[in-house]
Image (cartoon, rainbow, N blue to C red; front, side, top):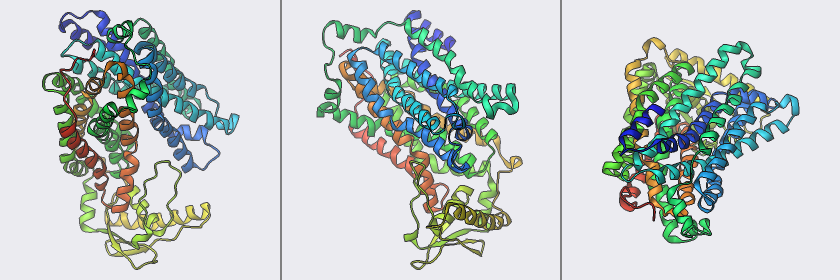
Length: 554
């Protein structure tokens, strides 16, 4: 990456080494963010065993992921806290603080004693560390984007800030390489203590990041404003209590970052979930396919950042939202066709139907991971959705126990409400075995057949999804920076970015799964990103202004 930046620096009107260092130092925060994100996500099962061992196995994973989600939930609050500090004190010092907090939070997870050692204090401290990570992250991105943009020459802000986005892929590959390397080194001891090594090694990345950031100077735009005595005395009040600016914050959220977030999460994380959980491709193959698509698509972050300097931020981002909304359904149907054609064939030859009282069926959107769905309808639909089986719904008389029909064979579900946890688990297991056997006989695959996967075409579809991601994400930092005045820029841009990405994007997997379970259509979960992306396209087109030529020193 440094070589690429050097090349850009040498061709960009004779920029010196300090400008290239600005991009590198700011991008390291994003590397840290995504390194930790993928690290925790990849090791969630092990973390569940280590810190939630007082619970059953299924609950361990749920609560490990809940601790992960806590970091997303507090991001907007971090945006308020550190955005305010950034507009009062300065960009450099604020995002130096945020990366230290991020780095130490990740490092201390590697040192944290397990549940077996210190009891309930272990998960409590883990959740506290995740929340600190989320708070710091809430201030990190806004600071990095603002700092780079305020150093960039006119006409190159889109290009320069796009490097902040490109490092997300570097964080992914770094985490995968370190995890695989540690597994190879420690072997079967990885689950016991070897998993800690990737978290502890983050201290090296932290040391490099802090060293480089310590060499930086304050943003020239902020420094001039401070010397002239024009800094804001109350950034939160100016940002959110005055309608003239609050209106822009709301439009930035609904007309830019909400659509950007769902396209980002759908093209990368939901696609991974769809391959693994719905189409039953093994985890290693899924990760390699996603990694390959990212490797091919990542340079387009810079391409579309550069393009936004020529044609504008708005056309590029909104075009990405529109293309995603119009093509998600055919792309994901093609993914099914190339990844697991047996699902299509079984759906035609032996259709599955759920016959249930609609009043007995819940929308299974479990944002906290703590809710349980125990009605006969929910038991049936949850099993089929997790198995990746498409089905249709037929209304049954009120109060009737739900049934599942597989190619003409009928299987009665059970009412789990009021059952003890052990009894419910046993009944669920029996129901799953019975229906699963019928699904196997009807040709619904328990896992994808590797010999029938069309890898080149599947990689092409996934790469197309990543290119949509680069369209919406490459120019977004420059667009947000340019929407707000210098005196409250850090505060104002951070909140819509983190509500968009932490909430609209972060909740996408849960919401989409709930929609699939309710409707029975394995593609219906796509309606969530499609609707949000179209909302952003319409609001952005009608109400959000183009900004590429604005004077950001104002």
